[in-house]
Length: 344
Image (cartoon, rainbow, N blue to C red):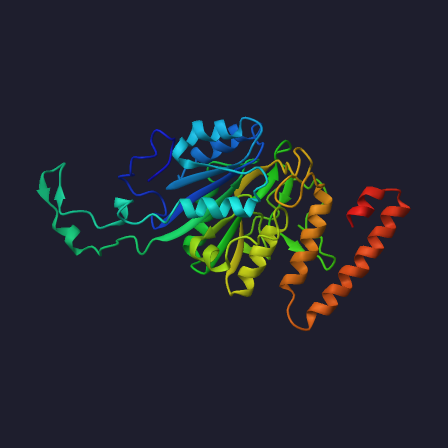
C-alpha cells in the first residue's frame, strides 16, 4: 500500500509510481526525538515518490515521540519497544513486522485486466503484456532516524541510482546540517587507520555541489540508508554488539566483503541533527547506560576494525589500535582533557 498519511495508508495505489518495480518500506526509529520528528514525518510523508509501506519503532521515548509517530502513521504501524533497545534491534523488529509487499498487495505490479471499465470495452493489447509488466519487484528498506529529515525528492534520487545500477545493494544520501542547511556532514564515509570516522570534508564545509558524483564508498550513514531487503537479511542486519555508532560502517563493510556495491547518491539530501553524537539527548541504549558519545564511538571503532580485519592483517590492525589509543590518551592527558583520555 502506498503511504501518504495514516488515513490513506490502507488504500492500494491504482496508478504505478515512478520506478514502479522498486518496492520501498520505510523504517523509522524514534527515541526522545519529538523536537525533530515533525520535520522528519513531513519529509517522509511528503516524498514526491512515496514509499509503499512504512513502520515505526519507538524505543521507550520519554517525550511525545510515540504520540507523534502514531498520529502521523496510525497505531498499527508503530511498535513500542523497551527504552534500552538498540537501533539495530529496533530495525530488526520493524522489518520482521513489515513483510515484503507482493503484486497481490500492489495491483499496479500485475498485468492489467482485459476489461476497461471506462470505455466499457475489452483491451486486446493487455493480453500481450507479461504477467509482471514492470519486472520482478525489488524490495528495499529505507532507514530513517528521528532526527533526519529527507528533502521531497530524496527517495526518487536514490531509486534513480539503483534503477540504472542493478548491482547496487546499499545507497546513501548526502547529509547536511539540521540548523546550517548548507553545511555538509557526510557524502559517504570511510575509516582511517586509527579507526576514526573519515568523511573527507573540511570542518563546516559548505555544499556547493563539489561532491555531487555518484560513486562507490566504504559506507553510508544509517540515517537515510536505502538497502535491498534481501541483502539486509543475508547480512543478518546490524551487529548486535554495536548498539549505536559505527553500526552503519560495519554493515556496509560486510556488504563489500560479500560482494555487494555501496554507493552514495548526492542528489538525495537529508538534514541530520546528529542528536546523539552532539549530546542533544542521552545515549542509553543496550549496554551503554548514560555513556558519552566519544566513548561509544571509540568502542564501536575498535570493534568494527577488529571484526572486519581479515587474516594476516588482524595483528597489524590490533597493533595500530593499541599504539594509537596510547598516543591519544597521552595527548588528552597533556591537554588536560581527562574525560576524553578515560574514554580512550
